Image (tube, rainbow, N blue to C red; front, side):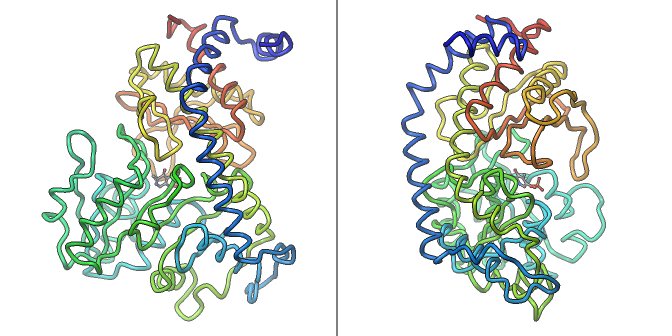
Length: 432
Ligand SMILES: *Cc1c(COP(=O)(O)O)cnc(C)c1O
């Protein structure tokens, strides 16, 4: 390492020399083993995104916007066309007025499911916030179950895979929708690969091809060269302050799928009879598209960070999910810290590497929609953006930290050094 870099790490960031060396040793390992393949994933998806923009004939007039009802907002229409080109779907709904990933998925569920319809999650219990949307947990008002939607959940196998054999016990030809969550959520399983999702959706379709397959695609975008929508998902949703927003989208969610289903969802998002024709973009079209343009690059920067982190903590003897060599389908790296103190110090270390709010230390607290107290480290330019370097974890046994994001690999590396340093100087880990 050149002297100037060593100097800024120790003097500017107060990182112990042995921590720096430890991280650099692991950087060499992951670089030689994995980075070439990651770079070819990045290259393919970059071309896929540009091709989607060119095919939509994107031009600079699409960056202007309207007021009031937002009729004839050509930019908004272009964003949606570009999304459906890239995700290979008939239509899309991409809006800054979708407040979060949970909101996007709620629109899908509540737009399509009617009283008496059956929803089956076949990837085990869904993400915390969605259990409240459904009504399977939390005693919220106005849940899907309040509306008379019937709900079932198929547990994963012991090996934490989709229980393909038992799908026919849970899904019948009367089931309206089957939902699959790609990313790990606050659990201890690997993300499901596109191939695994495709296999499960094929089983569902063999029961009845009319069953709607919905994929919660949060954190999965651009992690593989194809998306679940190219392998049987009828509709998919995600957040713009995760992967596809590329760090530039200030807020928003996306939904892609068949024209018919998008119409139902748009009618829920606005009103029947209005659908996709209204809705302001608040001047965000350029950011949303430029972020999408950068997303394949940024997703792989953060993926490199996740691998570096996995390599380090595996060698320190912690359980990691996924393991270093596993095939990945989301950007999340889980580490089982086995103590609250380590979880907290790790997250505080990540925060202290942030460009924004670096001098605040996060502490565990209540979060709307979440089951237990949560600690969240995020010194982000966009509040809560988890495509920016961030780490969080519910404060419950066995104290998993979920690390994700990073707009540049260098920032990931700094976060990894700062957090390891925080554990090291507090005698919470020993470097081998
Ligand atoms: C983040 C996430 C959500 C919800 O997104 P929010 O933007 O936090 O509401 C849903 N499902 C999964 C798997 C997620 O990772």
